[in-house]
Image 1 (cartoon, rainbow, N blue to C red):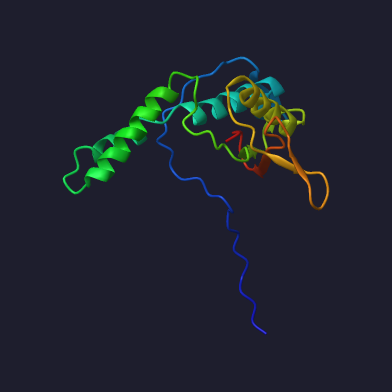
Image 2 (cartoon, helix red, strand yellow; image 1 turned 120 degrees about the vertical axis):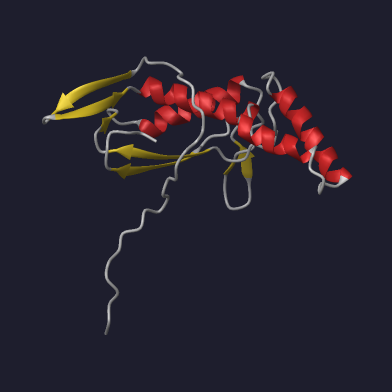
Length: 179
């Protein structure tokens, strides 16, 4: 019986990221040394702050590159009048959402976080709870629709009223980054 050789495949490989990020805070993060190597220390407050801002920005802001792609439809000679109408409405909706009162979309669904935590990143544990707190903060403070249901039994369910539980998947990877 032939056996194929083992080849490890990263389940979620990250590609080059051209996203323009901004600094939320330099608080709650520090560098220390352990066993002759630098480690990144991340306090729970940093994870809560990051999750809260990430869900806020995803709900109210669209990246400039994305906005430009939509705006380009307005001048595209191959775009139909319907295409241009939809693009214009999308841009108008985005402008309204950017004011921070009404989100881009009310049907928010399940809050999903996928992260890769380097072996030399120390948090002290409880990462999922800290991230979930950020999700909770955003949904309860930013006028987002609660759309997460939880089962009561085989036939009944109830809206959780907080959009929790969030789906939080954290992967252990090499390095000193939390991505």
